[in-house]
Length: 339
Ligand code: NAD
Ligand code: UD1
Image (cartoon, rainbow, N blue to C red; front, side):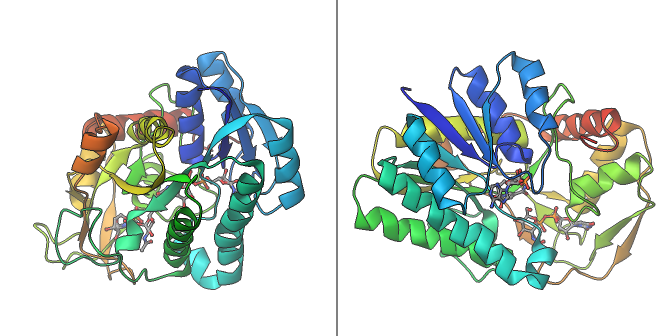
């Protein structure tokens, strides 16, 4: 593709894996990140892994002047937009920060793109926009639901504003990628998920219990209407997710308008199945106790991934055991993340 790919949030968890995949596929990449939830070390490691360096701009997507300069001084053909805040609990306590970062940030980015006449955009959305569907697996044409927290609402708002934008100007070509539960790490064990402070999501918690950094896992509810009573999710390897972005990018440069794709595997696993799978690959016992349900959690959530397979020619290839062993390699090689 002529022109560079701008990756906002490219030093973060999913952005770093996608940046590596882009560089390996021959794209020229500029990473824009304010490093509020990531480390520049992820980009150094990408360089070690593939021998190529993404250009890096430390800046904020809400900084319009910086964005205008960036677009004016580079030939950018598409934007992969990962930048944003993602901690559900924190979003409840700091809603303004979340709406400002995620919604205002996305608006500012789109304004700068429109000014520079860059109309190709891939947006990181989430299965959270479906709310609590009555049927599984979830298809893209299911109605969006009512997310239970400001983080989820910010994702839905951005999706809606991008839909409006594409209607208002026919040159826009936008992919809304609804991720299910991203987990795993690059197979080298050199880049992975490095949550700040106490982890909220299941796999970072399990892996920190496994290395002894945390004492035991709390399983949030064992009385859901599922086969073992614990919540079921569609865990997807971050490398599969990264590859999905490249296919989405190739798709949107060939057409116009806005489209939605689920990025999931189509298979759900319960919390207890995850614990067992992690114990097998790590050879460590994961002590856990059953506690009350976490407010806002749903019983089950997994994707129908057929639309992405049909239209993007993309399918998740990596199974549960590979996800678990890649997390374990990353976690045991980097017990303190990038520190
Ligand atoms: P992450 O926190 O690791 O990455 C986000 C990156 O964006 C970080 O490097 C952070 O420093 C940067 N950033 C945040 N606000 C910024 C701003 N205003 N300007 C510039 N940079 C900024 O998160 P991730 O897990 O890689 O998620 C990437 C995207 O995918 C997010 O938009 C997230 O909401 C979405 N998503 C993530 C998940 C998940 O489980 N990880 C699931 C669904 C959707
Ligand atoms: C959560 C967010 C969702 C966000 C996604 C990715 C909530 C309610 N939802 O999804 O908006 O898009 O992360 O960032 O926070 N679990 C435990 N113990 C733990 C942690 C989790 O039992 O310590 C269980 C949960 O109840 C759930 C499953 O593990 O059944 C997965 O949880 P998690 O990894 O937090 O992801 P989601 O809740 O699916």
